[in-house]
Amino acid sequence: MNELILILEENPEIQAVISSSLKDSPIFINQELDPEYFLQQVQNLNPDLIFISNSESKHNYKTCREIRKDPLINNIPVILLVNAKDEVDEDLLREFQINGM
Image (spheres, rainbow, N blue to C red):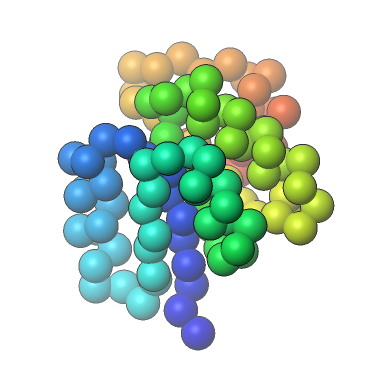
């Protein structure tokens, strides 16, 4: 069975990079722009891995909090997609139980 990665990323250029990076793999990816719809997709599809962009941080952090509060999906690994120049609060990483960035 193929693995599923759900990605919350608003930038179409970054979406294209992610898609092209995984196009030859057996991994199925589903990319979303809307944080609320993304959360519904996480709940419905129960992916193997989640990527969340830092670009719309306030909305995306809220989405991450909702994932971590839900006992049915809170064990899914989350990777935070950040720009190399972005500073990320270490307390937020601990709160969200971020698995990588």
